[in-house]
Image (cartoon, rainbow, N blue to C red; front, side, top):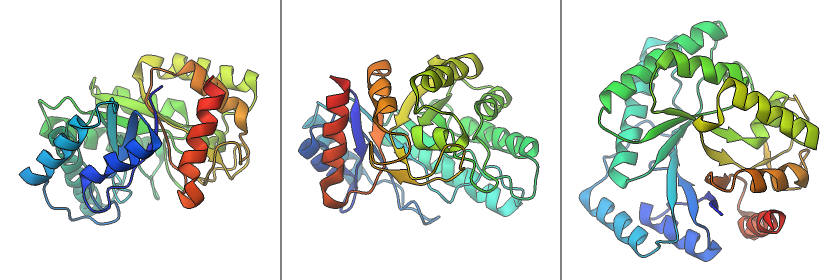
Amino acid sequence: MLLGVHCSVSGGLEHAFEEARTLGIDTFQIFTRNQRQWKAKPISEEEKKAFAAAWADNQQVKVIFSHASYLINLASADHELRSKSIAGFTEEVIRCHELGLAYTVLHPGAAGESSEEEAMERIADSLKKVVQETHGSQVKILLENTAGQGSHVGYKFEHIRNIMDLTGSDRIGTCFDTCHAFAAGYNIATEEGFHKTWQDFDHIIGLSKLHAIHLNDSKGDLASRLDRHEHIGKGKIGTLAFKLMMKKFQHIPKVIETDEENNMDEVNIKLLRELAS
C-alpha cells in the first residue's frame, strides 16, 4: 500500500523502525538531523550500521525518505543565508545517500523582498550546486508544493515546473502535499476538482515526476494560503479526496504529517486503509 507516517528518530535514527513496526507501515519519512538547527554531526559508522540492521529486521519497509530542515531557504537573496542553505542541503543529500534513503523532500524557499521569478532562479542555481556537489548519488530531490504562505514560492504547479526546467537535472522530482495544494487553491475536495487538479499536474509537471505524497487534511479553507495540517477527514478537505488519492496512487509512497497525540497516527492509518478498500 506504501502508506506511512513521519516517524520519530528520538534516541537514534534506527528507532524510527520501532514506530513503523507498531503501526504496520511499509514506508515512512524522517528527519535525519535536528530540523531546527544548522549544525549537525556527520552520521557515524555506528549509526549507519544500526540503521541498516534495523531496516534488515523490518523488510516490510520498502521506501524511506527524509524531509530537509525548515531553516533551508535556497531562494534567499541574503548571500550568507543562501550559502548556509546550500551547504546544509548538500549535507542532507549526503546523509540520505549514506543511509540508503530514496528521496529528500524540500520546501522550495521564500522570495522575501524579491520577485517570484528571481527567487526561482536562485533556487535553481542553488540546486545545481547541490546536484554537482553530490554527483554520483542516486538520492532524488523532491520539491514540495507549498500553501503559498508569506512569500513562499511553489504554490503553483508552474513554479515547480519552472524550477525543474531551470535546474535541468533528472534528480529533481516532486512531493505533493494535499493540505498545501488545497490551501493554495487546488480544489481536490470535490471529485471534479480532484480530477482537474491531477490533469493540470500531469500537463504542467508530469506524473512521472511525482515520487512522494504527504496526506494531510487542512485546517484552512480552499485558497486560504494557510499551512496548517489537520487529521484525515477532520479538516476542510474531507474524506473523498483521500479515498481518491489512495486508489489513484497505490504505487507512490504516502505519509501523514499530523500531530501524534492520542494515537492519531494509528487512527489516520486505519481510516486511510478503509478508504483504500
